[in-house]
Length: 320
Length: 320
View (cartoon, rainbow over the protein chains, first blue to last red):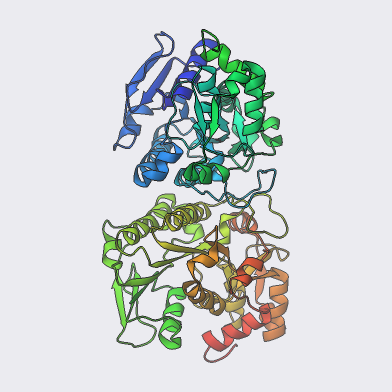
């Protein structure tokens, strides 16, 4: 039995791989980490195979998927601001590569669990205060549109028995370690991470904006949980709004001061960026998570706990 | 200025072409009717050009769209039951060909009005009694999934200024003239048309099933109206649930008896077909049509009137 992670060099892919290798949560003989640049393994383990692979190349999915594959975690994507500035690349990676993976799974491994990471960016326009499973998607970014198209395709492939698809709409992940990226939501980690490292950080959105957040650890647990559910548990829709917590930027700043002191909060300044604000403000800030909880997915307790997890897991020397 | 109709050999394409040629509702110098089989022109007119074209072939859209094109009515599609039995053909025609047309429009005619016919088949699962613009799509057929993917793509192309897209979600069309087709909704015309022609007809769904219907004439008027609206009138979403009327099969039968006598109604028998019933029963039977009406789209008055229009327009010798 083989498990594949696309986007295996990325932060979530590495975190997921480490969890799979250390926790014995899913059975496998081989764990394939694939990414456009050769991934490293987060843990030395003979079961790991690392593969440099451009998923937009013809036949790429054939190099990944065979009849031994039991689970594919498809995390590879062009992030939101990047997909907005380079529409064609976004279509190729976010949509076309997903379609090729689905098609190969249909041919070679129809029983495989195809776990796809979608996003709250599928939502936009006028939204109710609490977004439910019945809310129409109305993406205001190409990233959101591409993810929403994949959701439809995966649901149809699952309905027809072509592959055992599951779609997880991820909250914004905070706190990510490392450097800022081209995601419009990059600031949601930066305004916590940089101050904890003693660095200044610029917040491009209003302090009143509510974000829908999950810690990396909770999201990785939810990835693994998605692979353990039976297909029947999803009933009509394979798409799940993953649980998160609703926190305003102001509340994030208060939590930062709470955990790391006033001097940490003082390192964040506010300079509105219209492009980022337009994208992020179109995303919902709060969800009805009953279905996700009923399916056994989990949420973080509060944002203070999220910051403390970051300090524990990603700052070996502790906060500054 | 050029107007293009794909699916130009089809019933709605022919009806639309006739309206454009006879009513002067839209300005044009050339009207191109394209279809996989060479269309005929419904009205002899030097402005008409008929073109046999397989839209799934590479470069096909380049043969249609140039900088002179002002409006494209993209009606070509593989219908619901056919797309369900041949998934790959449905993907090619319903999704991939639409994508190629959009891409060519983006390169050559970004100001062109790209009018796409979607369907109530994008909806499914547990639906409220009255479907609103805010209801999530949850297709229970590949046809619906493919249409919903195109909706997302067109909205994104329009948002980015790549093309001036408009998406019309059509009610089930009744009464279609001619022969039954592979649409799951084919019976919704057959149970009226065949009895009016003195023929028996089998209804595969329950008499209590509510259908969401529009006459061909009203839909064609709405196509033309969609080309006359300004882009700004659509605001956040380019997708419109076209107005229709909600009628149960039993009410359709009563209207048939009303217009054409008891002997017409007696020609319809009921033999449930599980496949058709599963698809059609997943479609909504009633919509909130306020936005459509606010945009100036129209609905039929009642089903009696729809039957009378069919007798007037499509039965030159009158009903049997």
